[in-house]
Length: 117
Length: 111
Image: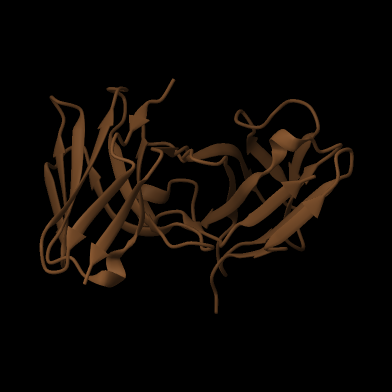
């Protein structure tokens, strides 16, 4: 299965702990996007990365959140000192180019459901 | 500021009939629109798209209509099948990678 993979699928953290969410893009895709879905809301763009570069992090909270996509390995979304309001589904998507409309759409992973207790 | 709106949170349709899901947008810079389908505990799956130079795009049982003057698009599913039961998200873009999603419509197709 060459789809977008995310792990863990479910993550429970206590307030103040760190959460690390991983995303492996589809084979051949070098562009990764992270979205967050709060309950009863649509998906909201957080950050767009290429290998070793953050292209656009305009949708990501300035504090406690960071993302990376190293040369080797998956993309990581890191949330430090989690709070209850961080409880959400976090989806990763990938595309073969940064212009997904010309050569393909964004393909989404199954998501990580983060619960902060 | 909700730039993409799906005002019907849910819709029930009898199997074999037409399902019509609606989406409105406010940003006139949007020029590309997509529909995604999402089953529980899965990620959204791309369904169909349309660019602003067209007013209709068809793919099998799925047709998307775009009315630019009304800033409105709709997804038609004919005939509806029980397997179509899912949450459908409308998304829009100004041509960039940044998709703006609506809040979704939960479709239930009754057998």
